[in-house]
Length: 249
Image (cartoon, rainbow, N blue to C red; front, top):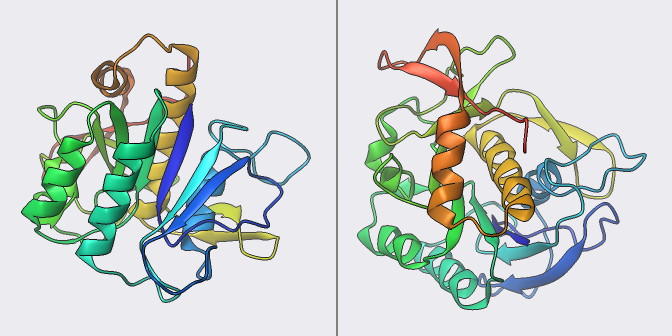
């Protein structure tokens, strides 16, 4: 089992993570996270279960940093596609990739994610308080896409976050407001966004798959959709919110 963080990279000096590899498609020669965003996401997923202030959703699972965004958190669609293609070519038998990024509609990016068969993708819905079906790669979400879980954000009251995207392309909701995780150089920092919600789902899916290795990527995502719990609250478009159920069997 391996987790891939397609983002600003991962802090390679962070001893709380089981580092496996780090690749860079930005071209800045800094083969580690120099922004902090990717590290925050990574530590939500596989941080060791020890004395640390943060425990990941799938403790100790190997993590791969796939750097497609620079120190400012910016990048090109081409770099992101290269990162997705690298994951598709180098992933283990069981692989989960988190994509807490997005932009305008891109058929090329959508196609790259769809072509990476056998991998579970946890994708952030976006933070524009708009329909997630207008952005890539979030717009490939929905029940018709096996292996993809597009995640919107909720707060501590199970209300959809004001910034969170919504719509039929959203598969599930997870905590995305003031989420604590580890930061560059040590310590804990809280951040908000659907970017923070997505790795909760990705980490839980990775843990489930590690315990059920015979499952297909489509089975994994369908299982999480079916296990999601109704909150009694509603999204901006009126659909009922179903949050991540973290009881992994």
